[in-house]
Amino acid sequence: MNYAYVLTGVLIMALVTYAVRVLPLAVFRKKIHNRFVQSFLFYVPYAVLSAMTFPAILESTSSGWSAAAGLLAAVLLAYKGKGLLTVALGATAVVFLAEQAMVLAGFPL
Image (cartoon, rainbow, N blue to C red; front, side, top):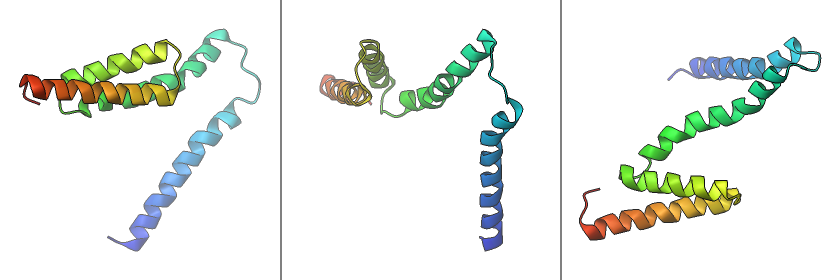
């Protein structure tokens, strides 16, 4: 791999990242008063994070059933207002127990 090629790629990625962060500051100089736009901008980070993590959740285990059990546990714990660490550890424990139960029951993983 060429050193200049790598540096050019890093420079382009840095410029794109910088532009994405600076562009809203340059375009929206005044406070946004439209309730629809405020609501939309409020939920964008949650929607993007969900779109990035949901497929990984379903493909990260050796079985779709254990992934679904872990997802359900995470949703229930989060709905009950538990913290991030509690939700992550609870979902991990449920996935582990579900896969162990499947092995004991003879289900192929």
